Length: 67
Image (cartoon, rainbow, N blue to C red; front, side):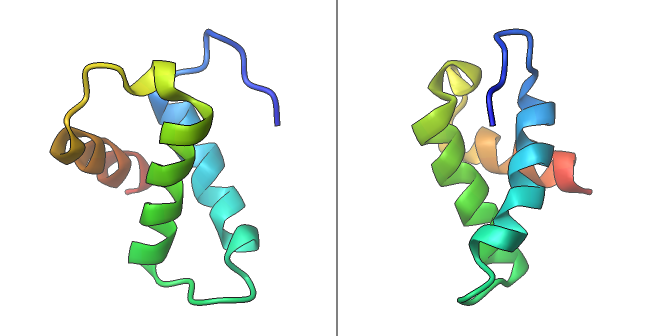
């Protein structure tokens, strides 16, 4: 998956949320596990999207996007 610079944090979270279902298919896939997957992938793949976010603020952004 290639995302452009114009991708918003919300869009990235939604994309990763859907990908997490497949990525975690062979293991535990609770809501919390999927949120952890999204957080880790944001940090690894899209660090420029989360500049300035504290850990707590990032959790809230993920929660808001998936609801």
